[in-house]
Length: 472
Ligand code: NAD
Picture (spheres, rainbow, N blue to C red):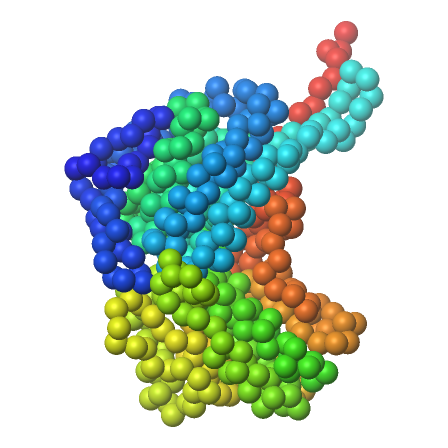
């Protein structure tokens, strides 16, 4: 069946017999059909990636880097189309879409400058010991629906720079930007280097089991991450797992509530809280709890929620029905337990998966809204008095993705930050990312690193090469 966006295998558009509708979450209307790849398509994609691997690996690093940078130019040349498509399929507001598309361009350009030169351990003339970084082979990339293109780029750029080839699968909820990118990329890359196939969750599982794939780079939920880890054991695949989080933010008593409200709001509600590193538990010192809560409510009232294609909209809907129902269920649980909303709490009946910004007033620490990753705009505000107690509560989670500390006394904030169990801890800032800054989760928030040379190294095998002259 013909679809506007096709899967790309070995440099070509490939038709599929079955399709599914991509839905605009702001209207609940179909955008278009997208292709569902079969196991056979996956096999074809893996073979194409295997066959192009030796050619791509042997191309000089500088050429691979230049082609990856050109992928950034491709997005740049089609920037407005990508922004509109991203708003339509993901639901985010215009500023959020500009951030993601701008970020995708930036990452491709900057990761294209990275390399891991061999490290010479011993150098005594003809006798030498060198550590080299060699590509793994075929990388399987699996991505979620909250930042579909940017998180795909975080995988594509280092995988290709390091000399690997790739089979990439976007989320079935947001396949379109990635399919479009996959097709455009063929004007730059040799056939088979980047194959993009869309399908249901089962396609992800087939990838993790496929013996022709050497590494899975996965971003998604912890529940799925465990399944990925289990099926990847089939051929001892290398793994990078970027998983869920339940990030705490700690607000110290010396903050100015009015001044800090805006930052705290966006820390939690950017991308309608569908952000792995959204602040999902806001611990506020009891001296400023009421004032910070009041200012948050006041700021939230100024934020416009709606269809991202409408001018001025800052926050969009939940991306899909499954997640919408999950968040509604969490709101219901708050109500069932008699918890008080300072704002929100009720979804409107109008079309679109809209949930209003909802602030829950100091719920018990063991309630679902505190313990679970909401992944929607429902934030528990939690009171604390004692620093040791708040550090213990912040760390009391199976997750360890990121955290933040907010206070005028930066030294004091840093002392607290250094006790938090998380892959990234921000002080008086949040969501600062860069191609050069390592990002990854502790505990059940993941395994491995994306970005920086640590991230690049994850797309490589480490090889020790020792030489010496033949004894005569
Ligand atoms: P998800 O785990 O449901 O799906 C992620 C991807 O995995 C999708 O492409 C899906 O089709 C695929 N998949 C589903 N079942 C699979 C299986 N058995 N084997 C292999 N692949 C399978 O996650 P989601 O709902 O799309 O994304 C939201 C989650 O992602 C949240 O928990 C969020 O915190 C997390 N996330 C983490 C990061 C990070 O960098 N740590 C970034 C963004 C999102």
